[in-house]
Length: 342
Ligand code: 5MM
Image 1 (tube, rainbow, N blue to C red):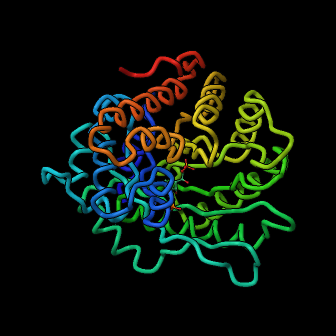
Image 2: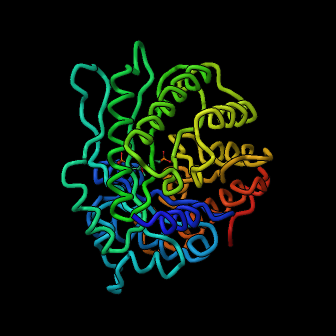
């Protein structure tokens, strides 16, 4: 492992004013997204859609530092035969790859999940590196509910995240460590705080035990936020204050950067929360975005599977990428939302 090079890639992923595009929806998830816009999910439509995003050059050159791909996409070519990975590289962004293989029920823990994909991972990482991937992503899913999460679920998911991260670094790939505490449910913000604290503490304990170099990774956490069904939604200021307070207590300053997931927040909430956090001075790490839905919902709708809508789809993506770029610098303002890219 060359830690200096891993650190260079990690820092590039959190370049000021840039963040990550999570375009790593598995086949089942992208089908759900396409169902919402009445588009059949085929290898061709998935390629066309993602090619549209990667050819939105203002977004890709100015606001996006890297793209998380799904296995199918990393091997696909654009309509003109150019590998999609090359399109990303040509725009100056870094290709990355989701390497977890989804979740399955965790035995003995009803309602809880463990992320799979460690078997054969070392060999897969070598192939992805040869194909151009310089970072990877693994998502652990922790749900909040009656009597959950259990200590067991938190422990085994943290263990798997650290196993994955260590394998990535041995393959010269920067691991994005994503322990996602879901915002489904009716819990309040303080319950999210308490669970996320347990999850992050256990995750960093496992990363240390398994000798993961913190300087060569990126953390992708959820924000501290009330459940979607909670009657008590927190203000933007409270989300920002509690998220920062929690991260400061759990995340060592050696971590090069933190790139949040959006987790089902509205586009504007995800941007407003990131912006409010970045208005705080003296943060130990850059805070940016690694959004899937909060970057893609608008372009998906604008595109709706029609070739004549590609320009509109690109503009919608550029707009959201620009808004989040501003938020990553604490320079976003709500009234900018009305002024779409033209
Ligand atoms: C883009 O969605 C990613 C893939 O999800 P599946 O493996 O379930 O298909 C997901 O991991 C994503 O990278 C993160 O959850 C962040 O995305 P959001 O939409 O929460 O910002």
